[in-house]
Length: 242
Image (cartoon, rainbow, N blue to C red; front, top):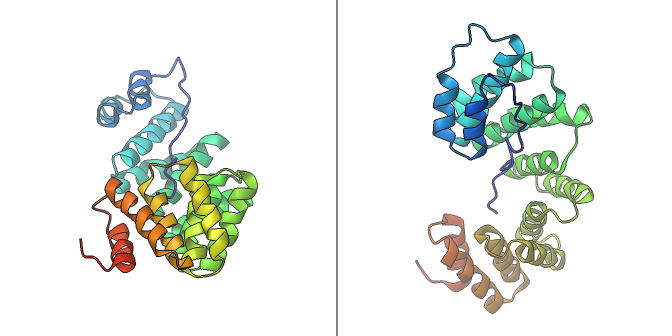
């Protein structure tokens, strides 16, 4: 199962027209991460209010996250979490912190951030998806399935949850028929996702349908030929080395 937990981290951000860092925010919004970062770092903050410093730290943290410079991102995001008063911004930063902790294999720290949000009543499909992924990484398959169920209670069309839960149900042999239904729905939603095609192929393999498994895994490989997990699944199903 391949998915970026928290791929929506640092998603929608509000642009204030009076912001002292407006030029950098505009660059951020057009996904020019390096240029935005350089613009933010060039600012003299000596006349910034505390709120303005927190806004700058917020965007610096997001830029470093987008550029996969996670240690730098953590430093700025933690400043916002401890120093900002905006509940939505703190929520976004905790979600981004959790994403970074999952990516960098600090799972317990990710769970800490997510459970802080959960206890505050800030539940969302993204939160449960990330918690579920953290559980799966730790081989807590039953817990992961329950958390993906919660995601689907909030967002019944969530393709990430459908794909991920379908993969786990198939891989563990828990419920092959439901796994196939979920994986098919995920592929219908995102037919060009190599990860979703791989999950569907693996579910067919687990159901004993070798031809279907080979077909879907071949499609996944055509899209992502260098993905090690897809290569492994294809070799298991076909016996062919790539």
